[in-house]
Length: 189
Image 1 (cartoon, rainbow, N blue to C red):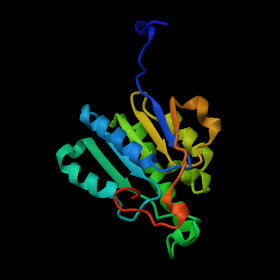
Image 2 (cartoon, rainbow, N blue to C red):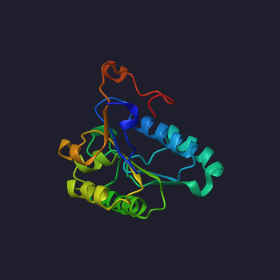
Image 3 (tube, rainbow, N blue to C red):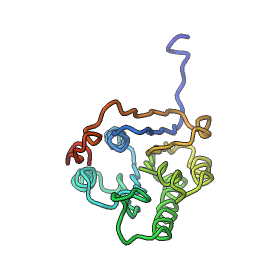
Image 4 (cartoon, rainbow, N blue to C red):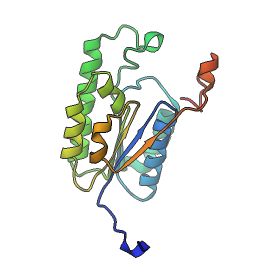
C-alpha cells in the first residue's frame, strides 16, 4: 500500500495502560503536542489529588495557554491500595469523586469545545469499581466526533479494543520500588 493510499481520521481514541510507569507522563507529552499545534485540551485526573510534578508544570504553562487548557483534579487519592490509600476517605467518598469527575469528563468530551480530552487514571477508576465499564463506553460513544480522547491507567478492559484506535501498554521490566526504594520526585511523580 502506497503512502498516498492512507487517510486521516477526524479524531482518535488513545489508551496508555499497563503495569509500568509512564502512562501519565505520556499523556502530558500528548497534551504538550496538542497545545503546541493550537488545540484546546482538557486534562482531567481521576485519582491524583496530591501535588505531583505534572500539576506544577501545568500551573506554570496554564497562563500561556489560557482558555486552551482546562485542568480538573477530581480524585481522592489511591483507592484500596493499602498504606498508599488516602486516609479518612470512605469508599462512598471515592465513588462520589469519581462520578463527579466523570461528569466533567463526559461534558468536556461531548461539548465540541476541546480537541483533546485526557482522562488520566480513568482505567483505574473503572477497574476499582468507582466507575463502570458502561461509563467508558458512554464516554467513547458520546464524545464529539472531532474530539480526540486519551484514557490512561492500569487495567484497560480489552473488551474495548475495537472501540479505540491506539493502545500502548507500558510493561515494567525493572523498577527500583521492587528493591524497596521510594518513588523519586521528578521521575515517578
